[in-house]
Structure formats: structure tokens, C-alpha cells
Image 1 (tube, rainbow, N blue to C red):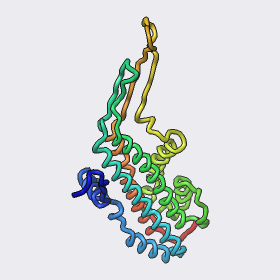
Image 2: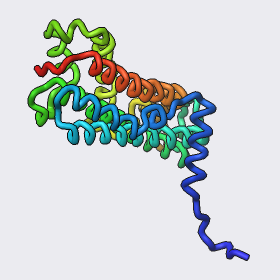
Image 3: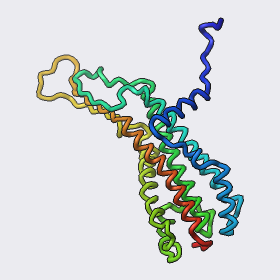
Image 4: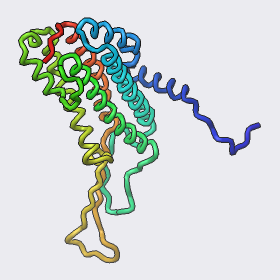
Length: 259
């Protein structure tokens, strides 16, 4: 018989199965199954030969993109697991005069915001690699990694041949998709590493009342709906798959003309 002190071992396969169950329940796609590594590599090799670009470099780039998508998919899964146990998934507000009273905030809430933060960073990295994939095909200087997606697409649109590509309008839509994620990521990375926009605490002293003893305050708490937040992240995740399909289609419909 096992001792009560024997640590419980959590099987990673059980976690994966739970993520798979949640993806199915909420109708989330597994992008790593829609875009399997072997198929992506085969596509990259075929296009590299056709477009006369470095085969190994192009294959490695799309492999890196696959793993960026896998990381985002994993973080979305862990966010879904945490979402099942957050205290108030629909959000909550509270106003109190007792500074010692607060919203109930537990470990699952902390895990949700932790994985949501990492998910945003992973989605941003997906867009970096999507941009670099497009850049390798259409820019002569493939080592220049600081070209943003909007600048690259604007340059492509200036070329009459690329402008006639039947997937050009779909490609242009990716600019707003990428900027949405970049804005959120930069805010989290450079400004607020905590979910300050989603969990707010406002403390105001009470005036005009005869106060005795300790100072009196009104404390207002606001906890945003994690259901709405994870739905927004789901949409961003799905758009990564749409973006990859668009870039693949755009590439297939073009000739090897570098900018």
C-alpha cells in the first residue's frame, strides 16, 4: 500500500487528453494536425525548387513556424484547463467599504492569466515566423529580419505582377490580424506584464463623513470575463492557420520575382 506521503505523479498524457477533450467541446481546431510537419516540409521543398530559393533555409523556416504554432496551441490548451476552475469565469464587480474585503482570487485564476500571457507571446512569435516565410520568397535580402508584415505586403502591392495575384486581397487582410496581436503583446511585454487591464482595483478615500479610528475607503474591484478573453484568443489562434494558408496560396500563385 502506498504511503500517504507518496507524491502523486501527473501523467502528461492525461493532460493532453484533457486538452483534446476541451478543444472538441469548444470546437477549437488542432492546427498542428491541419498543417502537419511532413506536409509543410514537402510543400516548402517543392516551392523552393520552383522559385529557385535556398531549399534547406526555406524548409527550416517553415519547421520553425510549425513549432511556434505548436507552442501557441499548447498554451491555449493550458488556458482552457485553467478556465474550467477560475472563480468567476463570467467576470465580477465588487464595491466595498472594507479594505480587507476583495474578490475571491485563487490559484486557477493565476494559472489562467499566466498561460494567457504566454499565449499572447506565442501568437506574436507565429506572426514573426509567418512574416519571415513570406520575406524569404519575395525579398532578395533574406537576412533582413526586421521587415514588418505591413511593410512587406505594401511593397508587394506596388508590383503589378504581385498585385494581380488572386490572393492579394486575402494577404492584405493579414495586416490587421497581425497588428491586433502585436499591440496586445507589446502592451503586455513593455507596459503591463500583469493583467491590469482585466483586473482592476480602485481605492478612494471617503470625504464628507465624520471619520473615527482608521481611515475609510471605497474599494472597487473589476474582474473581466475570462470566457470573452479566451474566445478572443481562440479567434487570434484560428487566424494563424488562415494566415499560413493564405501565404501558401499566394506563394503558389506567383512567379519567382524578388523585390
